[in-house]
Structure formats: C-alpha cells, structure tokens
Length: 430
Ligand code: XMP
Image (cartoon, rainbow, N blue to C red; front, side, top):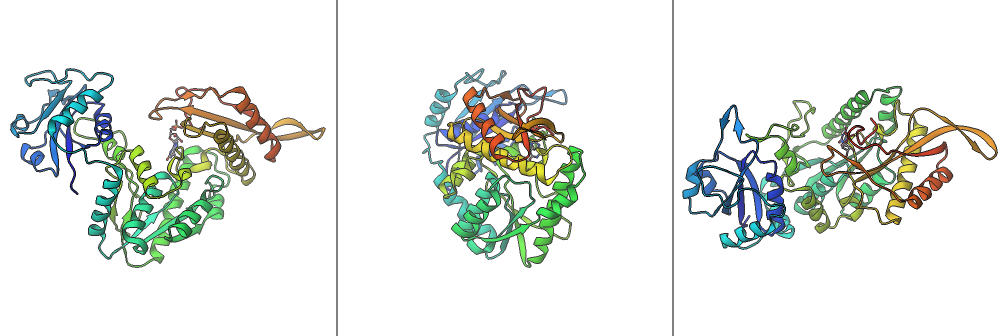
C-alpha cells in the first residue's frame, strides 16, 4: 500500500488515539507505536514520513520514567514532541485544545502528499485481502452490526463467493434486522449467506433465567455453539473474518497504557476449529468504518446504527425473558426509533431504546381495569459510554411516542422516561 504515514510514539498519553484520528482527518495516515521502538524499525515502517512523540501522564512504568530511544531524532525524519518535558527540544509543551494548526503545519513540514482517504484505503485493503486469502475460503459471523456488516461488504468485494456469511437470528434482534441482513447481503450484494433461525433454541435456553449475567453467558455461549455447528457443516474453510477495529487494538493495552479490555476474538470456539483471522478493519476508527461502509454501498440504516449490545433485546426484556414482553420491547423500540427519525433526532442522540420490566401495573382500557406492563424509555448521550447524560427530549416528542406506544403495542398500559445519568445508573437496565 503506497501511502505516507506519521508514526505516533506512545509515552503514556491518553490522547494517542485522538491525535491519530486528527492527523488522518487532515488526509495523512497515522498509527500508534510503542515508545521504545528501535530507530531502525521505525525508519523501515512503510511510508513513514514523520514522528510525533506523544508524552503523557502515564510515562512512569515500574517507578522508572520512560523515554523514546534518542536515536529516533537522528533518522532525518521530522519529529514533533508534545507534552514531554526533558532533554529534547519540545515543539509543544502541552497540546492546545484545538491541535489542528500544529498538526497541519507538521504535515506540511514532512513535505509528503496527503494521500489518506477511505477510497484509497479500500483499494489497498482489497489488494491485501486477495493476497492473504488467495483461493481459500472465509467464514464470517454476520450480526448486522456496523463492524461485521462492513467486513462482509469488504470481503464480498474482494473475494465474492469465497466468503460465507452466517447470520444467527437469536430472537433478540430489533424489529426488521434479520430481514434487512437477508435483503442487503443475500439479495442485493449476492453473498453466500446462511441464515439460521435459532429463535426457539435461544428462548428455550433462556426460559426462567432472571440473572442478567447468567442471561449474557447463555446468549454468548449458545451463539458460539450455533456458529460452531454451522462452521462444521461447511467444509474446507480455513479463515475467519473478524470485525476488530483500531480502538479494540489500542484498548488491548500498550506498554504504557493499562489494558482496558482484552481484544475480542472468537475465544470460545473449540480447539479443533482453528482459523486464521482476516481483520480488514483493524486499523480503522469507528467513523472511518462507517465511511468505509458507505463507500461500499451499505444503507445508512446499517452504517449509522446506534450501538446495540451483543445480548440484544435480551438485556432490555428485564428479568426472565418471556415472549410476550420481548414483543413489547421490540415493538416499542421500533416506534421509538421511528419517532426519533421523524423528529430529526436520529444520529444526534447517541443511544435510545426501551426496556420492559417483569412486573405489571394497573391501568384502564376500554372502560375496564387492565393489568399490564410498563415501558421505559431511555435516551442518553456519551462520548465513551463510561459516563452518560440524559437527552433532554422535548415534551411533544415524549407525548407522541407515549401515545403511539400505548395505542399500538398490546400488553402495556404505562410509559416512563428514565432520568438517571451514568453514573449512578448504567446505560442498560441490566
Ligand atoms: P452500560 O449499561 O454498561 O453500557 O452503561 C455501556 C454500553 O455498552 C453496551 N452494552 C453491551 N454491549 N455486550 C455488548 O456488546 C453487553 O453485554 C453489553 N452491555 C451493555 C450498552 O448498550 C452501552 O452502549
């Protein structure tokens, strides 16, 4: 792949990812490397035209202050040092709130072309994928989420029918989602798609289980079993597609940053199902993944979806899941999403959904006493899901949604709006 790159050396800054994203947004590719990279290795990185030494608060490891190998200053590459007091001439002592001007000037200083954009990325990545895969076959668990959908679209473009997608409908997806996966991938993009209707299997396993973590374990474990069964039916597949993205890799921990979470892979598949991984999005940030999906022709409804938990509606049908309450969650969620779209809130509010508790309340329907479920609306904004604030929905929006849920969804007689920020509450109810 012929493109220029600015290497960021990680001296424990919490802003490595932000700096990399900002450099990319200015049209230059950027990646993060460990602070103690050897000068020789750094020089030989493909396309490297400049280095940012990004200092930070965590630059003490085991009581020792860490630093870059001084040899990197003698490579003849332009170096920008940031927030790094000490022996080297610091170009910036502290990043200003808006770094654009500094980064722009540094990119100019490298004299290299700004040749990073999503179209070039797709072109280069497809070439790499064809090289890695050759004539072999790839299997992909296609949930319909942004990452797996974009991986599927990339692989379909790169290797067509050598890819087999498996879509497991576990009964906990939102209204219309399995149908959309079948329409977009099976029909429009002509993928090899195996659709597995596992609704009864999941709901039977979950019957009577009220503990949220136990529900999560059952859903995750059962998913692996269904996927494994499908994988065994298809012979001769050596590779497995994965929707790993750059933040997963960054969060897996560097030498200076503590591990936030382990890199999600298919831990759980049995030993004799060994696959080589294909991870075409592993150098992309989430917004770049979306841009990639859009450029590959995926519909906006897939590319700009709000985050959706792996256990799906299972953690929003509170307590032990029952089919009647699951339908109330699914139908009320569909109305909520439709009305957010109508009121121009789609894409503006980070995450919004409904949850249904496992108790009933008294109401009056058709002049008679009703004893039915409440529906809880939640709408939050956040940057990183660690903390979240409540979307201050306008009264007419809440009124319209409430009216529609009460009129159109059988089995509920009350609508509530959850006002609790995170912390103290979490975003999901379970
Ligand atoms: P909480 O509820 O912890 O949620 O504030 C933070 C974000 O994570 C999502 N979430 C999950 N995602 N598996 C997932 O893939 C899960 O088990 C899970 N639980 C919560 C949640 O939707 C929110 O965006």
